[in-house]
Length: 303
Image 1 (cartoon, rainbow, N blue to C red):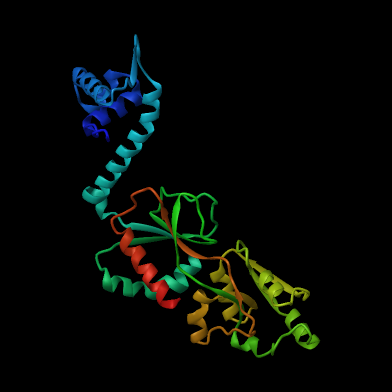
Image 2 (cartoon, rainbow, N blue to C red):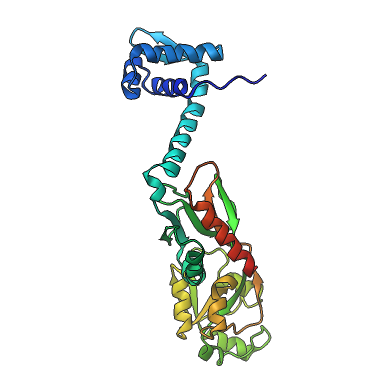
């Protein structure tokens, strides 16, 4: 038979007393008399049939049972406080904050954002860019985050937003000088080796990966430029500055408009993708599920 849950006031009193290890300080924090605080503790211990504190001459000491119970009670109170404030308090008007990969925002979200606000005019969103990513995901300054990777981040639920193939892209003018490329065509390989490669730092599957898969890894290029954002490399490629590696979801619009072309037929599937991340066991924001649902729907329309 399950034990009946203790009253919330008793649990709050236990949590405060366990933090302070002092009934007087806990009473001040909770705005209770010391007698009421003691009564709450005794009531909780009585209901649980367990002693939670040892009374010492100068304070309290948690028993083993009290030490085991405290983290659970503390986390439940914290989550309940946060959710209550988010839903009913002043912070319900706080903007939903989304950290997002810069190229994904520029090429994928931005063209669709007007459509989002047509459907949800009352949802406020604040976007911040992530360029250099820490391995650890910080949630103190954002509610959700869009990252590129293989789909697993401990402590976070991940929704896939892209299913890409990899292929070089360049300006139409540059493409006209390349012709068809294959490993057996020495003249074509020589033309390719004279081009500038536009590398982006931080991607496991970059231009080198595509060259390996296409059987062109032996080609030595005369020039290479490195960038810390893919949007920078694509912008240079649009203006004839070299070959950048395109990802289907990011360059579709540029290809349709003729700003970029894919000069080679070889396309390589990628193990990486863009994902929307949110903490697994944390209340995020009242509008988080609205934004998540919209993103997933848009992504599936393209998949």
